[in-house]
Length: 202
Image (cartoon, rainbow, N blue to C red; front, side, top):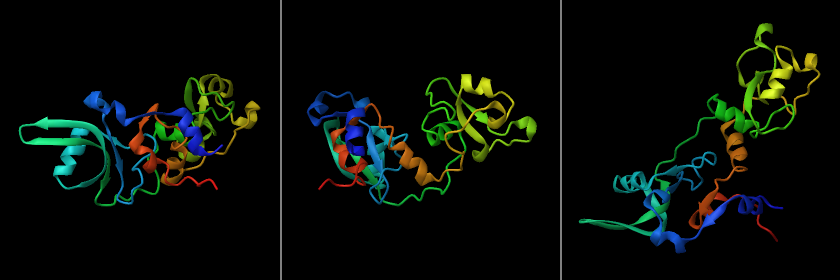
């Protein structure tokens, strides 16, 4: 099964037919970089409609797609943008910040000892009491039971095995992992911009 089909199953696309009655707070804009790729896949790069419209008037973005939903004022009547692209390219840093969220994303939100996705925390592969550092290369996602079972021992001492050795991921790697976790819903005008790199079927 192609990734596109998996995402279609996991995400519920909202159609434009619902736009006229849509609450304004449910009209975020998907933000693309100047190369027309999302600034971020996970979390998905979204701006509130007010921020998007402000960026339009400041001439910082181009409008690519719009909702069938208008905003009105004495001097303004315009469609709310659903997809916008920055006019200036933002170059991502090579390596992401070392945060709990990014660590969980690197490990696909799964315990690296048993695969559980519940009660996640992090574990020092080489315990701190043995000189282990709090770094990408020495921290692995672990569920609370596995974390307690391992305790202050190395995986070998505890008779436990890691699914993968922890690494320092690149920004690109995290973005690829993020594509596996689509939001609960997406607007239909976002389709072409989220799945641009999926191989076409013959």
